[in-house]
Image (cartoon, rainbow, N blue to C red; front, side, top):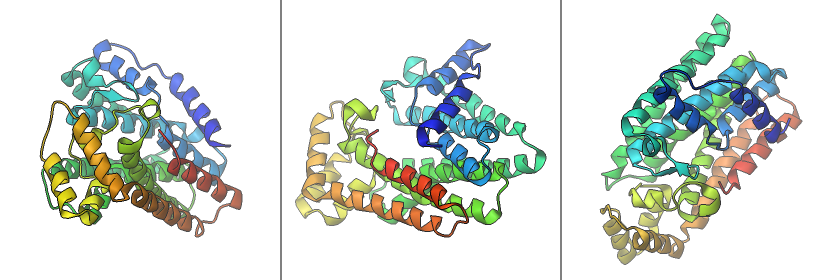
Length: 323
């Protein structure tokens, strides 16, 4: 199966679920965020891993849905914390409803995600729940570090990489490992595909950082320059601080100390400094490095060459996406 077939299989399962029941004000926002689209990368990875290790995609659908519901829960709460107006080109949950609804509906999504593991036998359930709890807590660790970094002026690139590993990458890795757990493959295979996902997740987040500043607003679906507006110490910013001249460095630090009502000048000036210092090229090199590290892990895995190629194709697709 290819990526589109996995997406189709997952969407068919997602649409078979009836999300809205009483009280409607709790469940309508859940239905809204889940229907907003998105790339469905994490559930696709769960299905792909299950297919590779057992040729049984349908068995992995509840685990894939758990991953997607959890991911969307984190988006609802992240959007509140970032005061983000748009998600996938549409109003965020807290903008469409209100902050209290966003908090409570998000909480319900976290619980719903756990419920989907109840579809599995006790041994598989226990492994899934253990991995999921570890991952969910790591995502919270990463989110807190992200918040902390906004007020720190001494963040180093390795700290940033650790933060995105926790905030983004561990869920990509866990999505793959859940597919392996459902397929009941060896622990070695499950751990190797987790490592593959960790590096792929880092490449994915760095690509997201690049697109946030240099993406096309028509395809990206989020506000371009959102990270700059929020003073997020992304790889782009940290690398620029490392190599820019004193004047440019001073300008960057000046802009990143301010929260403005009108941000067009700030965004264009920061972008200009990034471009002058070849930051778009340097982040693309990092994305390639992490993608290749992920591919190196595949060599150690005891799976068919065609399956390795399928995972490679997925990694290359992620690396070159524009959304």
